[in-house]
Image (cartoon, rainbow, N blue to C red; front, side, top):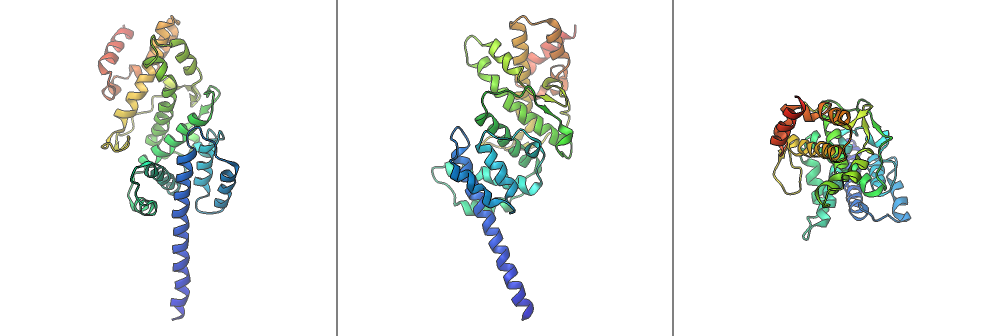
Length: 295
């Protein structure tokens, strides 16, 4: 009987803690949804994040807060790989954000419970985290300029080359959005503006972005765009990466930059790596390019 009486408060405490986590994830998801773009959270909302200090949600609350401000996302504290539990919580925050946008949203409490029980690959959780991080930075920090930033991938606690590749490809997806419109929408293309943005790209392990070649990790499938079927990770993101490389090449050619700059880009990047061409929608163009510059 005594054991039962001791166990009962522990069970109730567990339920209470579980409910607090659920409620917190829902609140953080709603805050993220409301202030993730250009809206700035009022001081009362920012102050309210302090209630998560010294709780199970401390890191995810601090991270969510920084996504709503023009703060310190590009710092080792947030660039470093979170633990798997926090990755799962941040994934849930994004799911709540998606849910509250729907015309007929699911009950958030049920959504959180269901997602906590769901087996989601670490790769997908990590992709979610860095997608949120770089998107938030782009939404909040203007003007874009990462030219003085050096991402040292060996410092961030990644477990393997796959995780490093996810970080690199997500950051390059973000970088690529900075120039996409100048190349694909404006007529004629604004090569000068695009190249100015490219010069503001960060370095990776001390070298220009295009010299990062460690993308030979095993491919995997995951749901990348909302409501779409699972697809090849490399096919989606390396295709986008090739678009950025080809955009820089177009800038150099159209602005009559030096042949040394052009050859450095082509022969020092994935543009020369024919085993990756299959992931690009412009595979034929890449094959012709390789023939042209390897003469």
